[in-house]
Length: 212
Image 1 (spheres, rainbow, N blue to C red):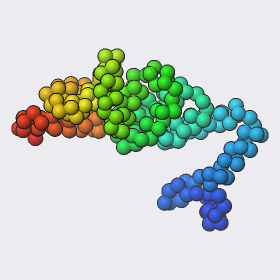
Image 2 (image 1 turned 45 degrees about the vertical axis):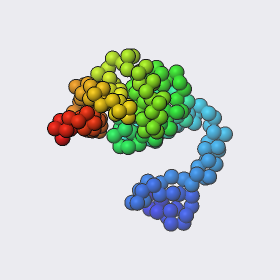
Image 3 (image 1 turned 90 degrees about the horizontal axis):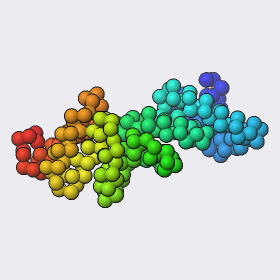
Image 4 (image 1 turned 90 degrees about the vertical axis):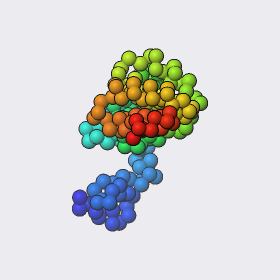
């Protein structure tokens, strides 16, 4: 740690990543040089193995973004899909929707379409970027292929939001209630989203007592 402080004070290619100056990264130009030298000296396979080890380590630390970032460098698309699936609810509940969207866009379409949970994640991405017209058809095609109650609940939340957007409050109520029947109370974000949909739908349907 003393050495890190000396390097930091001398401005030698280290960038602090937190206010306590306990985590650092190299300056991006210096990091690019080191990566190039590493690959020249040890080869692509060895570098991929290092990225795999780094991904595993960050996964143990619970750092979702770094975990997936290093997994992407291994070109193991199946593992990347599994990791995005593992962290997708964390991305949603912490507001990192655009991070999730960026990661999903780096997956081949066949990997995305092979996993229902990632297709639901893509629906959330479309909702966050207000692609409402495309989202309507996407969700209508997605719901019939779902059999997991939790994924059905998520799709129902999105469908309820769509019905509100289309000024169809009675259908919004139906989908929101279906979502709440299948949701676990432990997921505060999804539960709150469904209740919010339901409240606005009751208000739009002039059922004000139930909206409160």
